[in-house]
Length: 168
Image 1: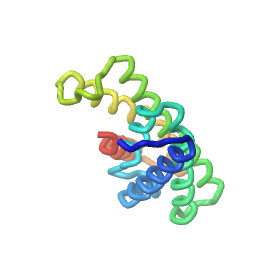
Image 2 (image 1 turned 90 degrees about the vertical axis):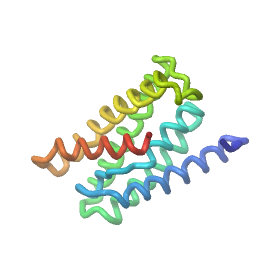
Image 3 (image 1 turned 120 degrees about the vertical axis):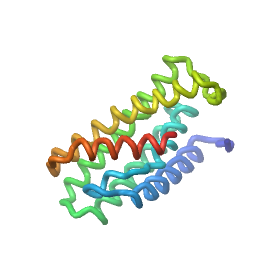
């Protein structure tokens, strides 16, 4: 990848990449200005956490919070406090995804350098599916509490697919 010599440089690069990839994901939103069919930020935060562990968290948090909050305040038709709460919960869901994904890859002793091997590919995909199911559940539950809907399964499925396509 690229060399990151110090913590500030790493945090800045990760924050910018997460910020811009989150904004790209918002081009694909549908329901409640939140549910996207493609979420490229998921791939970035999972990869950065896998590579740098806790050192990546400040950049991940900064990028996700600023992008999500900014988008919700300026584009979602909701009260400001709802924007803050949903941003907090959405970022919590994203963090749950990266922690679950990383935990499962480590637990299954998956070799990320050999994803072309069938069993490692299955471990990667299985970890991604489990991670997005957990993260999507957290985020969609908050969305349903804030707005309520009868279409929860469609929204949950679309959210999970968006995060999954971003990771894969």
